[in-house]
Image (tube, rainbow, N blue to C red; front, top):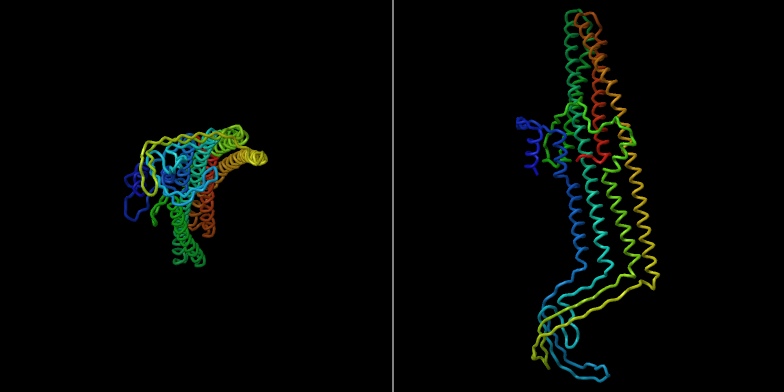
Length: 450
């Protein structure tokens, strides 16, 4: 797994500097994180194992019509009374042995374990593969659902790492701005051109901003650990996202109306395919139960081997022996009352599958509508806060120039520093929240094109 991480990371990022230093964090982009999660996430792997189980169950259902094969040998010894069909009691001491295709032949009776044996319910043999095939389709679709949910979680963790990196960058800038102002006001205070109180106030701001850097670094470390855990990387692995906190990413054209996107989601979401398969499986199971009394059960046994018997403990007169038995019969459970109850139960299961599918449709429509609303609203927020960042930076530069020229008040520049940091934080959050909403919408559509 760790080898696959190195290969994927180098291939996806395409940077020989991804491992520039022993203590440097690994640089990772979103596509690499998603591929790593798809390759080695335990819940995705578990879902894929369920597909293998469903495939095995389908194969098992297909071979119900095939007979079992048995070969072996048996020995039987009897010493004591036996009763004839006429009622006479006989004192018998005899032995019997059998070897060949089958096992367990005793005297004149049929071979207990047929060499080739078939005991099959024709209704089960016909419908079981149909139901198992629908189960396989449902499990496969559910596996895709698990994958989509995990990838959404990983994308969220990745963008939280990006957010934390942006937070650290903003904290460092705010600290540098506050430190420059503190140095300037201290210089003015030392030469008598400024107030000591202004110097102290700006020094406090610089210290607060320094503490903010420490908090930002802690949060960054936590976000790195959270993403590494989801990707099942070695404990202590440090990650650095290559995405810019201010770069927008678009997976879905959000200019389309909700109805169009909902229709697309209903066609692509694996949950809908799973619901369809579960409903068809319930219908097949109901058909099987309704028609059960019409389908016969068949029992066939064929054996061939060498049989030997004799009085006492001596086996003699060995000769080839062939046994063949065939039976066919019909069953009506509980004089028909049991059959009726079974049909009623299967109809309820079919209705449950219908209701679950309708609930899935409502859930898909809600997922798309919520994600689309988030994308559109956050896009409008980006434009607002981007303008706020421009004005805040201009305000800081003007106030800084005035202070350095001893024309403005330090408190005004402090306010400008705080406004700039706040505006940049809001812009960062708006962009990252937009990216998250975009990926949420992409997942709500079933990740079309995957």
